Length: 299
Image (tube, rainbow, N blue to C red; front, side, top):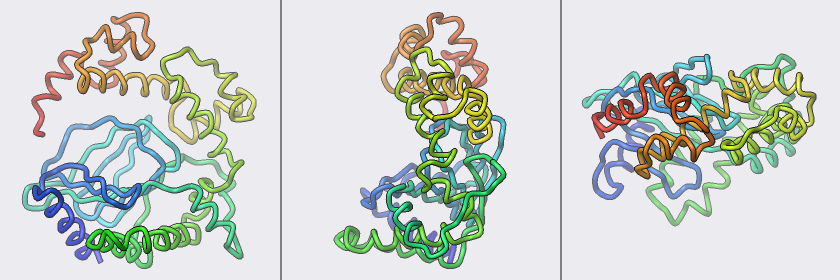
């Protein structure tokens, strides 16, 4: 199965715009992305959306807060909340490039499928992080192969892909990790309550945010909110906000050419020196040196 998935990914990438270069490829299937890289890289910061990321060849590590998740060939990283993290490809070469696919979850579809199950799953009693790694084979692997093969016939995508998406949700909601996946579909689970607070944080990350406001959004007491937030995200609300601020500042400096002071004030820092200190702690170097090193990396 893995060889068929590799062939399907490479076939799409090799014919996409006729280049076949390393990069992330958005497909005509909504929420489906393909990735290829022929070199190991430095940890890259980004916000992971609720999705399943399957490694088809190579290996990767992702750090959420203080927790490290490693996954290799035919293993999937499943994320059920929008979380800032550092991702690093650790298995890749020119001869054997890293290949992966990512499928963002459609919560509405997952909820519909769950409502139709005769015996819907129940969330695990013990709270755990909103991230886990699992082996992917059998029916699920076949679903992803059929989804990739649809890319060869774009006209078939709007007709056939919805059924495959529902099938993927079915196997996830009835599989060995159904007690974790179902938290995505339950409208009033702790995961969904924290997700509402995360929306507020993402929309207002440059503003001072009171924990009481976030707890009220999640309909929890401040102490319960803080506990569930830390359990699900592996960081505190303030750490989460800081990650969002620094990621956006980095984007502003790299993509928009903002200087250090401009980026700092834009994301809510009152002091450029404080921003530089916290940036260095997160990225391992002060802003100017970090950007120079970033520009020196392979494209």
